Image (cartoon, rainbow, N blue to C red):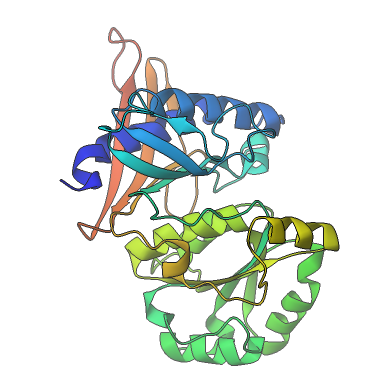
Length: 328
């Protein structure tokens, strides 16, 4: 039996509970608290599942994170050779600053696969190019920006001026932003959340046509899992900003920093699952809504095995004596 048939509802619940916990802190201005409660909620739910799970993308190395650290075993059957072995990549709160300020596109995210199905990416920077199925195979991470935008425009049968490219608003992207503007495309600068932007690029109707620039490597792996389910593409390359980072990557076995990772390199699994619950409102998902006796969540769940994309709208009732509000 495939992972999705065993764990679909369980993984949906994991991201729902993390999103609800984080949403309680929305706009309070404390991103550390927002992240902490999301991590705790996600860990509690994971440990209730009948799996032998292993965190391959998490909150950092063992000495950097109290829980959901890389290599941590989770699940009620952890250490049990008869348990369902699952590699798990998590971002309990993607967009901590977004949640803390009440901005859009904060999410709780989990990707999973059979053992070995997700790359154990280092906690470093990664250059990325993300497009959806319409432009898959038409762009190259090393091509000049103008060439990629021409190819992207041709794929969408429109002018370059009609394109919208998402870029993280960082000083390191000054030249990239200048090149995109010079080509005539529009830019949406975001403060956080290039994972959510990558998913939006693979879905028609969001107004996002591609994501370019450098962000976190762990988010790149989770994006790749989503692209496998959506039919999109990510091209990526690890980036070292100084000799210290270069040495650290070499110690982890990443010696060739010129290597380009394709979608299947980052997420090679054949039983990939992806669950993403909205914390604040975004292009694809509504944020958590609260009412007197509970809350309402909105989740995107995808299965590569079943070629299935599902939007799940859930009402969580904490007090059965109060009405369930269907219009929150």
